[in-house]
Image 1: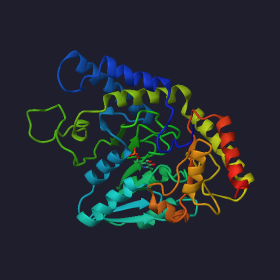
Image 2: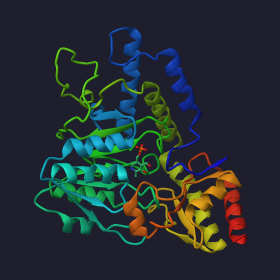
Image 3: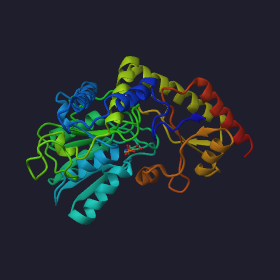
Image 4: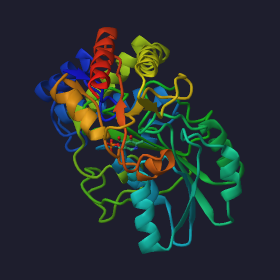
Length: 381
Ligand SMILES: Cc1ncc(COP(=O)(O)O)c(C=O)c1O
């Protein structure tokens, strides 16, 4: 199988991710923070080590402000539902995933919260000045994706963070697409909260993710109990990370995530970006040569987190993806990619999009085979 669906979840993972996850389960799979025995303490310390690793990866000074979740969706819900109050106004973009839009719509319906979607151009590009125009006295939150999961377009995050900071607005970044191949410095980018999955570009196992919450920001928890700490009180402990980490953690997954980050650090984030973009470039240029193809992604490493989004002019995206899978053994994603607004912006609500998302372990031979498959499909049309 040629796996080109790394934007959904990365596969394969670095060897050390498999090894460390299993090692944790076999050697110290106790419950971190539940009990004072040595195995539980070891598990706690290993989890803390990964928290520190993530802190240093994103330039987060206090690792206790990083709370583990089971994915980016949970992290985004914690940030959005926990921060907003009745009467608040939110600004977001038309390239957001429904992990952002659905909580916002639910709050709009149930808690009198309003939100404005800032439009973008045909490639999903946004102008930070348009955000400025949308600011109201009641604006308390700006939520943006780092990069689109539909076509990889990268948002002007630094400008957004600056604008939010200047206007006293909290900036929540959804780093689901790009964390692991785009450098993120929460201080330099004025990021107040950041949600990210562990299982995509950070190369960890599924069931991992986290939210970073800047010092000074207080959220209301959305899940209560099961923290292990402060059993003497009947309410949720206020200190982080316990305040947001209810229930037993995915310790083996978190340990695997630590190994994923080690791999990225060792390989170099720029090298990973370079590898992915070489493949993206070859795919783009090959598709342009084949013809009969409309491309929705940009062939520029600084504007694209590593996705090729295309359609054959006359074929439904699900059909193309189906043939790639069944005839050529190539995994892509088709249809609507959990981002209705993005498809509206790109004009692909009816057709969907075929998405190719290479990862650091794909080879140039696999990319050649993919282009050969597309050439055959095109010739048979
Ligand atoms: C931009 C974006 N946000 C949020 C999510 C949700 O991530 P998860 O599957 O980890 O909940 C995704 C997943 O594809 C995504 O691409």
